[in-house]
Image (tube, rainbow, N blue to C red):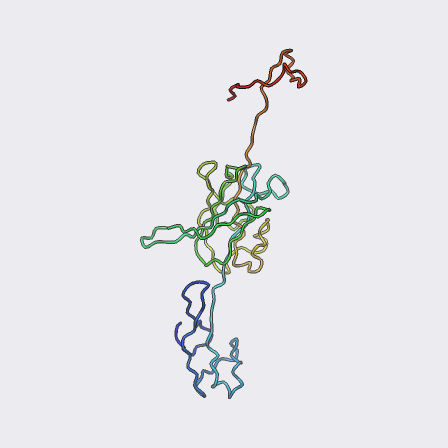
Length: 254
């Protein structure tokens, strides 16, 4: 509220923007005419001095919504099953991948609009984190790495609260992979064993207000190639010491 209503345990602060200063209403103090607070309420007993309870107003409280966070891992998915095998070194996290946080807002026509809030890069272990977020709906976008252009086939709904599984979809190899819309709400995010894969402990300071299960995986790119060479003796083996068995330039390989 924006009034000095003499009610304890209610928020008396006004804030223009998140992160800005919070200001109380004008508070008038009158000797012998201040509220008698319930002594069981936090802070209520602070006015027992200075003439007693009626000479102190212990009802000017400020409430803040805890900030939320989202994060986890971008990883290689060698077998393309949509799940990270932490015992397989070929399914490690991918470092230096661009990760974009998008907030999903409903416009005046009831249509969703997307607002880019922030961009970060995965660390050397493939983990990423966005914090200091307000409750609401979000999406994560991940740029395809240079050495892994294809998002895994095992995509699952983004807000399934299951760690270590791919939560994104991709239209074509090389495109940015996008999660579905997920909702962050205070005290309602996965905790403990629900976040038991890498990156799951990034919200341990406020576990119930962070979702560390939004993972994105890519299948490592493969390659094939070698040499087209002359084989004068027709033995099927290139003799690198024989100048007559060198490579053949200009041959079309399809």
